[in-house]
Image 1 (tube, rainbow, N blue to C red):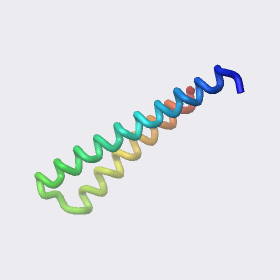
Image 2: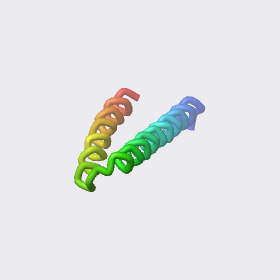
Image 3: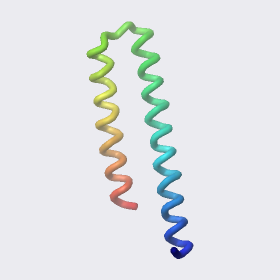
Length: 66
C-alpha cells in the first residue's frame, strides 16, 4: 500500500475520532443542561435526535468530499 493511501486512511480516522469526540462533548453538555432545567425524557430524546440528525448530515457531507 503506498504511503499516500496510508496517510489518507490515517487522516480519515483522526477526523472521524475528532468528530465522535465533538458529538460526545455536545451530547454531555446538552444532557447536563437538561438535568439543570429538569426536562422530561421526551424533550431530551427530541433534542438528542435533532443533534444526531444535524451531525449525521455534516458527517455525510464531510466524508463524501474526502
